[in-house]
Image (tube, rainbow, N blue to C red; front, top):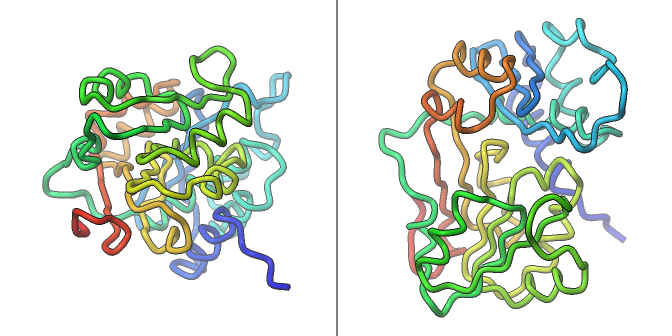
Length: 261
C-alpha cells in the first residue's frame, strides 16, 4: 500500500528539488516570527508558536550555529522536527527558497473569495481583522480555534461538521506548524473556495495539487533589513506590513468562477 506524503513532506521535497545546495546566510528567531535568508538574498518567514515552547531560557539549543548552515538541514526540520520551533525554521527556509517576486499590485484576499449571504465560512484559526469584513457580506461565519484564549469552536466533532459543510474555508498557515493541516483538509469535501492564509504560507501552488486548496494568500518581503529588524525586536504582521507585499495565487481548474492570477 502506498503511503501518502504529508503536506509538510511535499514542501520539503519541493524546496530541496528547487535549491538542493542552498545555504542559510541569516537566521532570526523572534517572539512572533522567525526569518531565514538564503544566499541569493531571499527571505522566508514563519510564525513562532509561543504556546508550544518548553519552559526555560533556551528556545533553540542550536542557536549560534544556524547562519551558514546548509538549507537542506533546516528544511528537513519541517517534516521531521520534534518541536514547533524546528518546524518553524524548516518552513521559513522553504518559504525563502520558494519565494516568488513581489507583485506589481496587491489584491484583496476577501474580495477574491466573492462571499455572499449564501456562504457558510469555516475559519480555521482566528483571523481577528477579517471577522467583521466576512460578517458584513452576510455570510455565516464559524471560527475553529484550538487556543483556549481565543474565540471559536474547539470540540472536534463540531469542527469536523463545520469543515464538511462549509462552502468557503480559510485555513491559517500555522496549521503547517502544529501538525493539523492534513487532518483539516481531509475534512473539507464540498467547499467552492479553500484558502491557506498568512505570512507563513508557502507560495507555490504545485504544493497543493492533491488538496482542495485553490487559493494561497501569503506575502513576500521588499526590505530584508527592516523585516529582520522587526523579527528580532519581537514584532508581528502589523509591524512588518510596510515591508511586505501581499500575494494571492489562485489555482485554475479548482475554482469555478475565476481564473488563475
